[in-house]
Image (cartoon, rainbow, N blue to C red):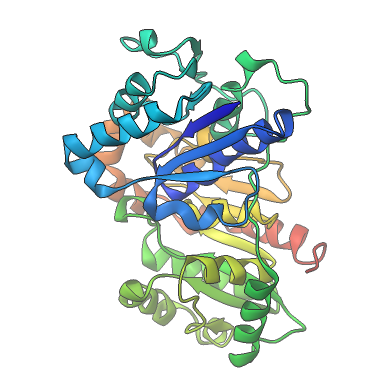
Length: 358
């Protein structure tokens, strides 16, 4: 049996959608399972034995119609028995049409249901604390009526070398071993997903004030100016706990560093999803235009908590479309005061700093 799973979006999407591959592997251990993803996301799939082949969707496929059609021909030549399209947008519709797979599963959406043999309802509300991001992907397995237990948790696989390299980096920067270590997801994937830097400095102060902890900042070298802005706005007592220059050289080394941390706090995005896949407690600050019900995965009030402006100022959010919220996002962020959820961060730290161990 040959299976293709498509999810060509961002790192968090690719990582979460990998649960489809994991559950297919459990149900069909002898199958060939291929995963089509954007070439910038493959680092989160390293070591995943549920995936036989990673098929890259590259920039040339997005910009050149001939290259996109060539990719479609490549898929057709594989003669897949089953295709699951977790992306379900124009580029994947073309590939699905060209693939000629025997069975094709995706979400039920107007105008393109004819492309698939099975169209699954695109549920608007979560039924459990898994969150819609998880529930929607698992729903794509329902037409198969799998006999094996469903595992809803995305996973990252860290090699012994990656762990040892991270430990060595901690030692090089003299990270105190008798303290818990908190990773701060400092910046979102874009400005509209980034909590205002001055507010984030207060969040970091809350973390420092609530425990004798090591604090790491997650940022790219090109974002050092923004990271310094947050650092400089923190209290001197907080700055002493921050290991500002402790960074991974690439995404895999960052994953190794997160694996040595005890929890993560900050902006929603790939870093949070990677930390969750490493079984690290998380506290997420959502952008005003992002729907919390989708990405607040595994929310249990203890190990995974999140906050959204709607939790505190619903009057600013209600009856506005996503397009309008996105347009007003920066102004709405300014209304999302860190004081609103100061106590919630304290609760999160109290519940996790004393109950977890590496």
